[in-house]
Image (cartoon, rainbow, N blue to C red; front, side):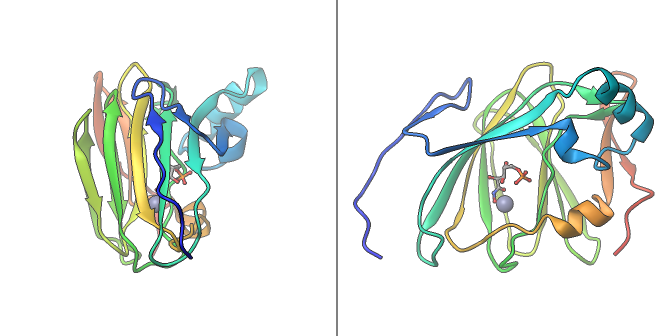
Length: 190
Ligand code: PAN
Ligand code: ZN
């Protein structure tokens, strides 16, 4: 498909961009069971349903040869000791890679393969992460301000959330003694 060249403007601080085709909001109620402390989750949901993150997308052809563009902003906060994070996913076409670029705030990128290999990277403004094909990926806000990052990935990558919803990630990122700390996730299974 032949497209016309385009440009967009990104506000690095807020993650807003123009023109913006679609804004997706993920509240705690959209992520039930994804945080490890289910009691803390229930206690918070009894009072409020906080926005964990939002991401904005430019609608582009979901075809090989094209690219998808998105900017995500994760709010600061925790459920129990576990920091606010994205759901995380593998790509539906697992042989597709992705680039994340930190724009604002600070966080960690957690990655894993279906076999259980695990890797993490600390992301600050200007840090670019290359997520190779076959690695599931999740971003976590470890700071006290919104964590904003840009993503670009193949047009036909698609998203597979089901596997992560079932097992979670190999490790979880929690605050311990005021610092981020990776713990083994007892729920994880291959
Ligand atoms: C990103 C993510 C975005 C939201 O654009 O889709 O940060 O995270 P979840 O999709 O895990 O809810 C990306 O990795 N796209 O492939
Ligand atoms: Zn992705």
